[in-house]
Image (cartoon, rainbow, N blue to C red; front, side, top):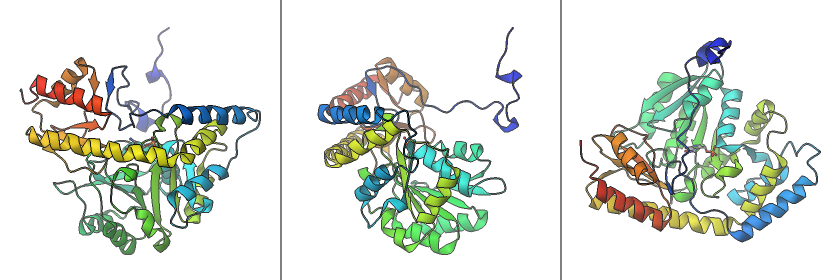
Amino acid sequence: MSFSLNDLPLRADLVGEEPYGAPQLDVPVVLNVNENPYPPSPLIRQEMAAAVVRAAGGLNRYPDREALGLRTDLAAYLGHGLTADNIWAANGSNEVMSHLLTAFGGPGRSVLTFTPTYSMYPEYARNTFTGYVTEPRNPDFTLTADLVLDAVQRHDPTVVVITTPNNPTGTSVGLEVFEAVLAGSDAIVVADEAYQEFSGRPSALELLAESPRLVVSRTMSKAFALAGGRVGYLAAHPAIVDACRIVRLPYHLSAQTQAVARVALAHADELLAQVRSLAAEARSFEAWAREHGYDVVDSEANFTLIGRFPDRHRVWQDLLDRGILIRETGPDGFLRVSAGTPQEMNLLKHALEDLDPTRE
Ligand code: PMP
């Protein structure tokens, strides 16, 4: 008997939807999902393994539902006088954002973002029955206070997400934009700072004391090289944390996840040194690309948007045929490249020189 998804009573708004995901391909050079190319050092690995062994001794019990040890360590890492009460953690900032929209979105409400931006936002909105409204960024992908305030006043969203540095453009947003939107609306304002450690700009953390409606979202997937560990977190007023605690599934963050993340945080200095070299690698690739006649978007993240390719899919495929996986995303004619090791970036440069990306 043939049976498929079409035969199931799937929610009407999900019919025809595809699961999200960039291709996960086993190729030598992977530069497509803004991961950190450096695996944990042997010492950190050993400490992680030992921490997991300790956690395994208690796996018959549920994990700490409040993840208090991890939240205390995250608060210490962020500084700014924050304590565990200001921090919420979940399985990636994807889950943190879902908690926020579950708590503050929902039927009859909307979330506003500024495009082009992270492709998961509409999915969080859909899953939580929250309306998804977007406004275009300026042509150079920047955002000004006027642009954001005007959009907020027209759409009256309950949640505004401002991504800085933005994915896929790498563009940063000044703190004056956050100050203006917090002062000019009563929305929850989320600064998605997934790539903040790669940027030299001040963090929206500096504004937390000024507003209980500001949320700063971070992740351990990039700067802490812990994409596989799945830990994202937010910093905000304790009332926002209380809202997330209402909607989270009980025991959502496993004991081993909490243990591994705490080891990574204990080695923040070592991991953040790599962040500086990755940012430098991205900036030097951008200089190279400009010299070679590409359009390059000013980025403050560990990735770069380059164009314009008359046929970007063909360039993407040609690079893949050479064992290099990048991302077909962003505005028409552009491709996104994550910063890899110096060796990986050299392979990419040689491949681009080789394949004549301007060919129609
Ligand atoms: N926000 C932005 C802007 C991102 O680019 C990403 C990852 N690509 C995330 C959030 C989610 O990261 P994670 O769930 O791994 O923490």
